[in-house]
Length: 495
Ligand code: HEM
Image (cartoon, rainbow, N blue to C red):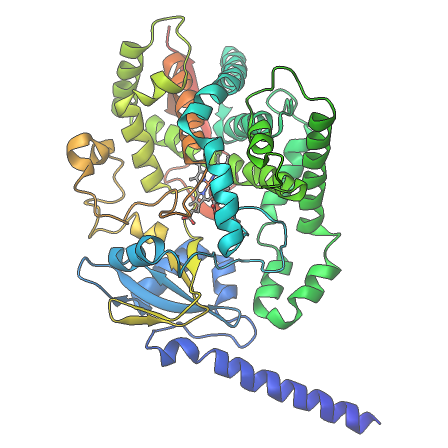
């Protein structure tokens, strides 16, 4: 009996070994240079330890020149799945824009995640949901939502004032995370989150836990052993990240049910109501879909916007001359009691330049912007195998000396009206690109601009003894973060 079990096991291991070795030949067969792989993890383990640094080193060592505009391309394996990183603008344009039909889906980190939201959705299902939801983020809707944002920004300013009165050094990382969760909580869920004032807020803790775990052990195991990903998903369905996600989803469902049971009159202008309106009565969006979209708006919209605010404030603190120029623009536009809103913030040209440049130096999503090849395609003479993920190496792209002169210099002038046209297309993509770019871009820009206007209208921010120099950063889950999750700066009132 034992002998049969042993033979079965050995045959299984042999079969697995041969199959795995075959998977690891795909990219080489298509002519890509790939770092040495580990039989179990492919190249994933090195990346989990330090993805930004590893990506830079690998691109230097294994990247090959491609296209006429500059940029490189290389292969790597996420578990046994082939993936391609590139900094070639022509290549990226073909994948993200020109041939977007072939590259309509994302190469998902967790393929067993079956929550039906925009980031996960595939093919026609995604197209349908995206076109239903797009009007929720139109300029007209943003104007209406800017009232909610004004209130959350006012709360942040009150908190900052009281910290300044106590001569506290301010952790802007904390301040901005609380602001953005409060805002998205109110705009997406009509929830009075109160996490700006309540340090023990449960919702903040839950969302933080969910985001900290987006790339957890289950994602790594499932990526490395796709054959058992469904079993792993089932085993962990009530634990860790899946459990935290489920709690947030249930919270979203409760809010939707309450809104349906007691529809407010007049209906509020928040993303929940807009999704419900968009869903209509003809079932364009099911209840599960509305809930899933609310969930993803919270996860996608909270830490990313906080990161953009964090890094912009840091850069302005480090560059007092740029901060002062921004304050002059704000002072010219805003009289003492004038409120910020969608229209007046969008008119601030220098603010837009500052924020754009800050997201170039510190892109809030530095790595995971990609598409999945539904068919084999040849671009710039290089063939992408069917089933491979193609990712923009955003971190390298944004600091590429061939595309950006003196790339580590914070220079908002790169985005002035005269200079903007000189930027090589597809070398700047903080919000991704093409039909599947960030749907919340307008929302995020409005929120970030409203917050920055109020902060720099009221205060002058500077670095202090506990501000790290240089600023150590890491890719935390999917978002760029300051190592240690603290950004200590000093602020003083301007009046
Ligand atoms: C500064 C803040 C933000 C940054 C830097 C950012 C960045 C991104 C990026 C890079 C993508 C992938 C795009 C692609 O694959 O081409 C994305 C997708 C997405 N973002 Fe954002 N985002 C931000 C804020 C927001 C906000 C506030 C929301 C919601 C209210 C949001 C919701 C989404 C959704 C739903 C997707 C998936 C879109 C789709 O597949 O159709 N994001 N975002």
